[in-house]
Length: 68
Image (tube, rainbow, N blue to C red; front, top):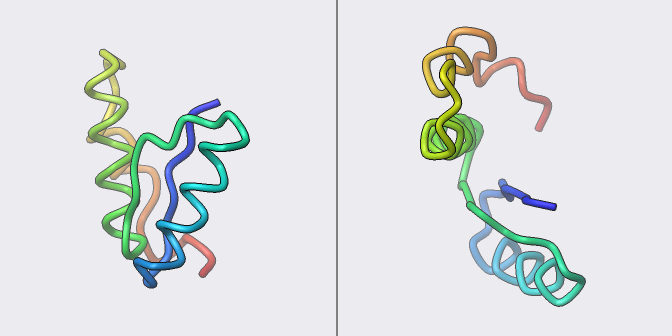
């Protein structure tokens, strides 16, 4: 399973990423805030060849809609 992590604390993200990798997850991205999270996911979708990738995601989900 692919995972993208988001948290404002870099050390926490790194620790969680290591734990997830050890448990067999594929950590494909990390973000410091909601805006960066959307960008990372959008770029990942576009990289995978998803036709409606980044623009579609950004149009549908505004960072303020993500619960902290």
